[in-house]
Image (tube, rainbow, N blue to C red; front, side):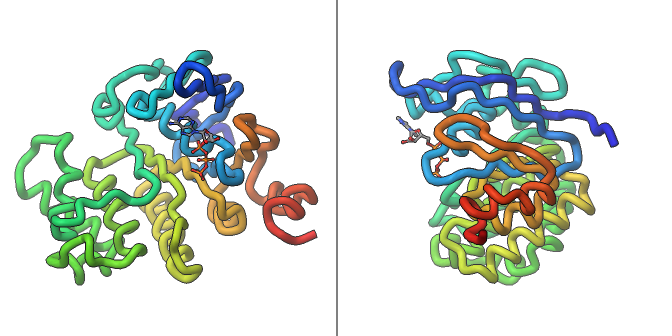
Length: 248
Ligand code: ATP
């Protein structure tokens, strides 16, 4: 099937501090309604790619020096991150970044900031988040800083959902979580993809789990895409098996 491309990254180069070339011409396509995985080891450039897309490199002294990034055909490079959220793209940062002193529910409500509709609608959206994350409903009055790593990851995704995104850029959702929780988070991603039609681009070091849930994968090494293909094909590829799945 030929699915509409939502996000198109074309041959981007990213330089930090004016001298450190980190992305050396990365291209990728994210189709509407798909789960696309960005794979690779520590330092391969996954986070940099996501931050380039959502224009969050500035505070890291990084910039896109070549190439183009388009969303729905429109060049979005160098646009305000808040503008991109209005267009439907939101990033869930690595490490979760909850407001530790706010409750779980207050954290979720901060995700609503981009829209100014009524309170009733906000509560409906909150309820929807709770249907996907029943655990967060149980914990809604707890201070976020005292919840577990898995719960904080749920808060981070739930907060992103409150902006009613079309596309979620999810950075390393498995980080620091026990295998069972990783599975739980990915099951929810799958549910959101299937039931809400949400599009995902997710960066993961955990190739094994990512390739079981994603439809398509790109493998990054030292700032270059070295391989890409349907997840089912990558799972069977001998090099992927040997270097990324730990079997041969
Ligand atoms: P990780 O899983 O550790 O996040 P990654 O694949 O996401 O890895 P990046 O975080 O994008 O990789 O980092 C890619 C390269 O860019 C690394 O060599 C890293 O040291 C370098 N880098 C990242 N941020 C900066 C920065 N602010 N200034 C200079 N170099 C940076």
